[in-house]
Image 1: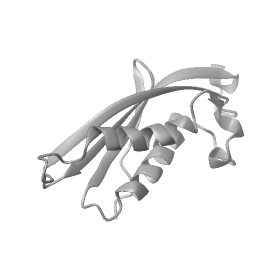
Image 2 (image 1 turned 60 degrees about the vertical axis):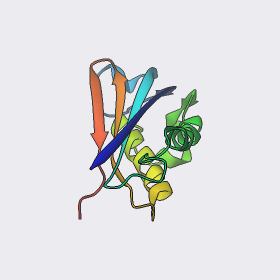
Image 3 (image 1 turned 180 degrees about the horizontal axis):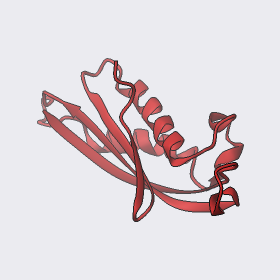
Length: 125
């Protein structure tokens, strides 16, 4: 099994109400996002997936989050825009891009600081 991982970043602000502590106040993060795609076979060029393609897809998603107040985005309406929710949003969007490709999205990891991260691997059937 081959794996390809890319890493990109974006900046955003949010409020996490009703959790207690400082995060209930407006604050921001310089988020780092890691995405890993896996598959058993390489293409005719000897690649699992072109890094440029995967980066392009991730850039499209992150453009909708970058320098935004996450609480105001429709995708987070009714939920706390936590790092967990950000990871799931990215995972769901990328999964759609990979449908039918024979590739599997292994997971999305979102770092909200140098020492705090979450990972979302999707729903296991």
